[in-house]
Amino acid sequence: MHPFVSHKGDKIYFTAHDEFTLPEHKESSKIWYANRLENSWSEATPVDSPINDDFVFYPNQAKNGDLYYFDISKRGTYYAPNKNGKFPEVQKVAIGGVHAFISPSQDYLLVNSRNRVDKERKSDIYVYFKENDGTWSKAINLGSDVNSNFSETCPSITPDGKILFFGRYEEAGGESNFYWVSTEVIHKLKKAHFKK
Image 1 (cartoon, rainbow, N blue to C red):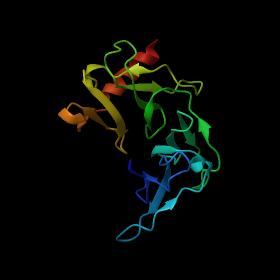
Image 2: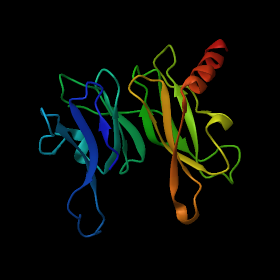
Image 3: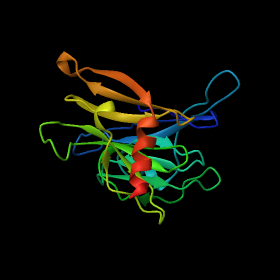
Image 4: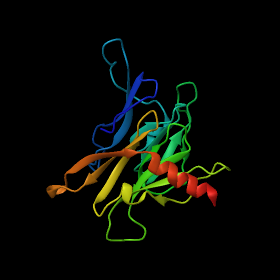
C-alpha cells in the first residue's frame, strides 16, 4: 500500500506488512522497494535502514532522494537523507499531522490533521512551509479550495509539482473519492506567508 515512484522512475517504494508480532498479534509494516527493469520490476526488498526499525508507512521522496515517512511507533513524521542511494540515518521532522508528503524541492510539506478551529471536522489538509532558517512554519489550512465538511486525507504532489491529489471521505459506508487541484492554492498561501 501507499506506493510512490521515485522522481527518476527507477524505483517504487511502498508499505508492506510483515509477519505478526507476538504477543500483541498486531501487524507491523515496513517500507519496501522494487527496481525498475526493462519490462518489469525486480523482486521487492525491504529498505535496509533504521527506517524499518519501527512500524512505518506512507513513504515519499523529494527530488534529491531524501525519503520521508510516518513512524506509527513514534507517532511522528521522519525523513532519511539520501546518502548515495542509502538511508543510514533518520531524523524527526518537527511538524504535526499524518500522511506527510514532501514537495519535490522540499520547500513545503503537506499533512492531514484534525481541524484546529472547527472540532467537528475530523480531518483537513494543511501545509508547512520551510522557513529561511530551515525550520518549518506553523500549519496553515489549505482552505475551501481543498477542505470541506468531509474528511480530507492522504495528500500527494505530482513529480512536476503542479497537481495536488487527495482523498475525501464523503461516501456512505466510509468510502473515499480522489480529487485534484492545482498547487497554485499552495503557492498563493506561500506568497502570503512570506510577505509577513
